[in-house]
Image 1 (cartoon, rainbow, N blue to C red):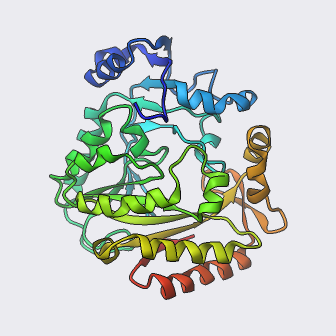
Image 2 (image 1 turned 30 degrees about the horizontal axis):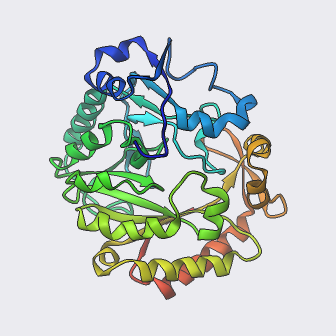
Image 3 (image 1 turned 45 degrees about the vertical axis):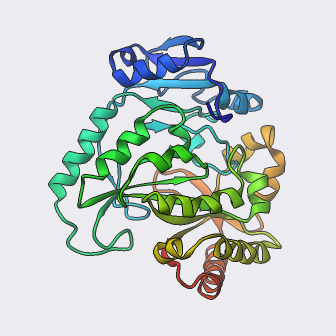
Length: 352
């Protein structure tokens, strides 16, 4: 088992034992304490557990939750993907200080693996079959319908816990009109044996190494992620980069120019020929700021900048902080210009 996890407690819905995937996962952890729960989503120890801030990293390392996914709806997206597929997991073994996911499900947010993977894969196949061929290209993909498979987690890390990710990548090999997609900050070489045949897009998340050391807790270093891009391309993945989040501070311009040069120097011609990018400027949240001050206050020095930020209501109704509108547009323009100069072969699929 990768050092990211050392599972000692498993919280599980009783129905988990009826699924082959649930049985496989339990067999991997014969010494773990099994704790029955009624619902994988609202476990009192983790939902709204701001009071356990000092224990988050231990919880992420030692705790696994197993459940059965109840809804199989495909949600339209329009940014990273055409649709958000029903997730085969939620939560994350990593602990990035800016992550939006903990705002939805407690804060420690350990990984929940959903064991009815066959239901999930069948739902994706049915949905893609009903869509037929994409008739007009868009910024997501010129020909294929793209399904985001890991909206609330990191599938490279999930693949350490179960074969769900292998199964998801497998179905897209036989879907000529669709691709899977997920973002990652974890180098998991097991993915290189999954035979994606160009039908799964991996979005490797990058930020300047100095900022990643401050904010990307329990993730792989930036140079390791960049080096993995060529390996993924050789293994048959489509690989894009996800410049996320862009954190503005007094020296951010020099850091980002350096990162772009590092990326250009670190990947080969095959990766460059198919590379595209997303750019996501930092958003933050007052409640997350207060909680972060208890477990990682040094990170908030970079994330909490009321002098640069303003309130914005999210699509879900939450009040978040984003960079002031006019400044944000200027800074995005700068980053676009640097990309055109340093990595001109890398198109920008979208930026916000």
